[in-house]
Picture 1 (tube, rainbow, N blue to C red):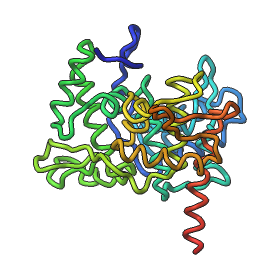
Picture 2 (picture 1 turned 180 degrees about the vertical axis):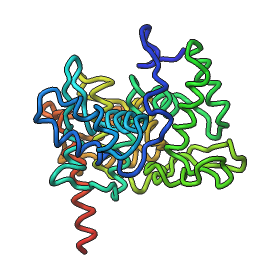
Picture 3 (picture 1 turned 45 degrees about the horizontal axis):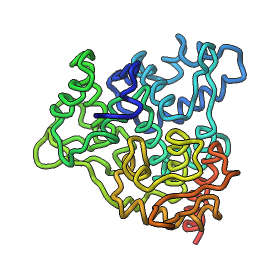
Length: 316
């Protein structure tokens, strides 16, 4: 029996919001900048998404809605519930702010952070969360993924799910040159650089690329581990290896890591986090132990180390 956040009794799947456009280069910064310019104003939501938005963003109405969607689910802006206020987030400021570390998403760790947020956004990105956390196939056909999602949520419109899956695949995988329509599809989404999903022989067949992720920084992994822990078992001082590697929404699932890859990351926790997180195999129990003063809300602090090490390598 399936378990997890998607299988709560009152869960309502979401297969829309992107207006069929995958995330594109430049969109997150463009949206962050607009929100940053207006967040000092009262009820700035209309300033961001109102009639002037088409001219400000230089795109059509549907694409404005798509930019808004992606910036929200990527976690770089936040619309405050019950208000007309839009604000920037700590992650948005970290990447795109005045002293942002990577405004043009040139560092792969930025892309891993965005991917993590999309693939764990269970309320608004059903296809993303379910596919990375529940879909066990190694290779799959596009139509079969649509069918599986339709079986899980039969009340959802088939056309809506089909469009969502198409957008999902265009977000992560280069499109074949023979694909009808826009030839620049393979260049439009920065997340294709992560190489998580690849085409295989047939045009509609894809493969998950599981295993070691050399461009994934230890800081981003620790960030993901802390965010998962906060969601999965926030009161516990320990977290089992099995959960980290295999539970829905875990780093192992979302980053498509094998057990050995997860273990290699966990072995380094003590030194990387200055003992705030420690790997333990005492009495046959494989688990991570956290200190009592570890604050989940400070997870982004560990990511900074990835960008500092990148700067050091470039300087050298």
